Image 1 (tube, rainbow, N blue to C red):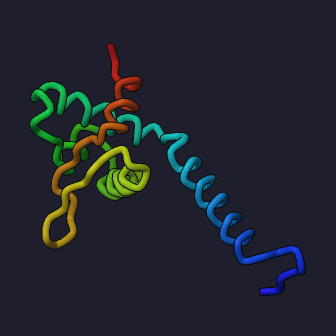
Image 2: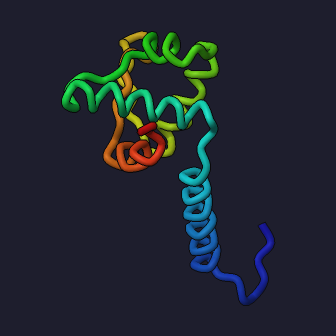
Length: 113
C-alpha cells in the first residue's frame, strides 16, 4: 500500500472505523417485505405467549408461505442486523427464533391493528 507523507497509520485506522460504522448503519436500515413479515409474525407469537415462547423455523415457513431457503436467508440477515436471535441445533439448523429488544421495537411498527 502506497502512503503519502501526510497519511499516517492513525488516519488509515480512523478511515476504516468510519467505513465500518457506515456499513453498520446501512445494514440496520431497510428491511425486505419478507423480513418485515417475519418480524411481525415472531412479534405476534411471542406477545401472544407472554414473551415466553419463540417461533420455530418450520412455523415461520408454513405461516409465511415462503420458500424455506428464502426464509433462512432472511433470518440470517435479520440476525446480522441484531433484530432476532436464531437458536440452532447442534447440526447448525435453525430451530427457534426470538426477537431482541431492538427487534421488538422495530416489529412494533410493522404489526397490524
